[in-house]
Length: 604
Image 1 (cartoon, helix red, strand yellow):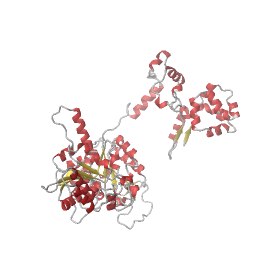
Image 2 (spheres, one colour):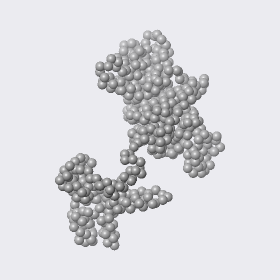
Image 3 (cartoon, one colour):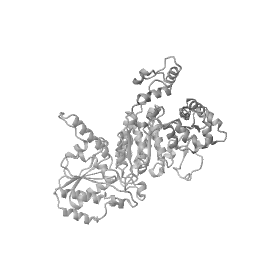
Image 4 (spheres, one colour):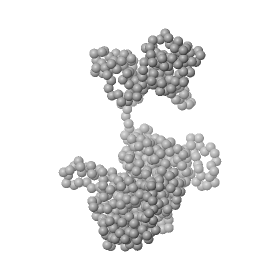
């Protein structure tokens, strides 16, 4: 560590400080005092700094107030700065840190030097400009000062020659960001992930986390993309079902395996390797996110496309490293963020620590983040394949946030023609029977979509009401699409073909009230209310409130997003429209054992 605190004008005084009095006063003086000294003048410094000890006053007795004012800080002494950088450059074998002391607003004089107004000062008066000119010996005559001209030395001046030499060594005169890597990498067809596109076998249940692992395993075997995949973890790999990758690609350790892991007797033991591909960052979300950003921007900084997959507990993701997620969007990062065991009610038993009901709300604030909350394996495959096409093949400046669950259930598989609607954020998953006196539209995403499907069965079996079930993998993208259509129509008022939002078009031909339930705050699904077809009822259920420890079933009852609350919400919407009697709603509340006096979960 090299400290550059005091400038060269102090050297003589420090050399005369045989008793260490000056050094002691320097160490005892507070930062606020130092700022005050430079906001005043030499007389003030003499009285309040050197006046702290009689021998210091005697030491500067032969110095004028101007001499005292010229005593400089190390960060404004070019000779000491040069010496510090030279020493740092020559120090081999260890990192070097420079701590350099400077003055806020240096050079602004009375207009802002060492004053808290420095950032707000937009214009200097003539006296301040003249003072700056004199202080730094800039050769500009008085009659030109009012124009505040640039000063440029002659072309043959040593400063100009040096600048040209350095610019030539750096490769040009303007910094340039590489927008696209020079290489092209082909992405496999969607059919490469057929194992997760097909329906699960009878009696077979998997989680979307397992589907993700199958997808990444397929990519690792791809001859074009395998070496570019960067799996990143901060917690137990087994939580995300990724332990199979230990034997396949290993965990990166630049020193290799240094110990015998406790699970060495297992097939999928914790294997570290110098050539390992997994980055296991420990419990360090910020460090993992930084590694993800480095890989996600490698196309620009290294001209080499990488495909990072950072899997984390969703509660630990955008909430803890939200600023880095925003920065990654600003840096045009490209990669996948996987929020595991996502939702307010899914990682039961750990309460506030893990239960995430708002990561998708946070993700919606990042313009180039493509957020999805898929329910089924085929949705995960379609979304991830789209991400690969857009980020790797087309080199678009987007990144994907995909929430995953470790809840096991059967999956219906992809039906031809659903792909584009999945990517847009809404598609008809299950059409109710034709006919019937009453009909409702049920909608959901993530793990709670399965409660919505179950509610459709209850409506039919208990109340004779048919329901169409819609999967909404991305309410955020639906909202952005609607806002984009709304904007285009506003700016093109005479166009005879106004644009229609995808959610509006999808629901226009349907009948009955629309009821939505998700594992996230109500505001998540409320994003699309403006684009619901006119005159249609739109009821949103969500998990507003804090997390708490209990079983999944109990948590979904507590937050009022389970199948019974979806059923009651649908019946109440029909009653509000006059289609059925309110007494039917009361019957349903009693039938399903719902306590109408239970506290609002957001208040607990």
